[in-house]
Amino acid sequence: MGLRFRIDWPLPGTRRRADLVFVGAKVAVFVDGCFWHGCPEHGTWPKANADWWRNKIETNIRRDHDTDARLKADGWRVLRFWEHDESVRAARAIRHAVAIRRRKAEFRR
Ligand SMILES: [Zn+2]
Image 1 (cartoon, rainbow, N blue to C red):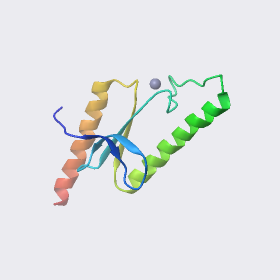
Image 2: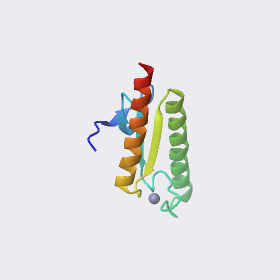
Image 3: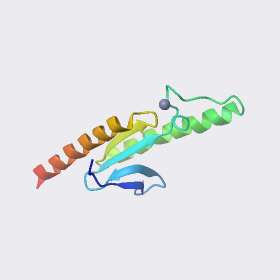
Image 4: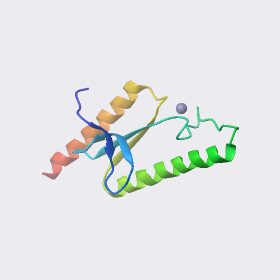
């Protein structure tokens, strides 16, 4: 779609990274793996070491929410997709969000 972005971008003040970032537009995109981030459709809860896995995945989900909150507080638009999401639809949603942000930035000048 002709948009330029950075990948695996470190979030300031954290050891976390965003999967895709449009720095100027302040749009951060995450593509969450269904297993690691507890997808309601495809997430599975392993039976071996069940407590450990549940804690691991729930910690990931809490961290995701915390990351979103921090970014939003800092003026970022955050988009999250699941790895199962259709990539063209995701790309269109991203393009839309970036376009809105850039339009707003033009009005501020
Ligand atoms: Zn999924």
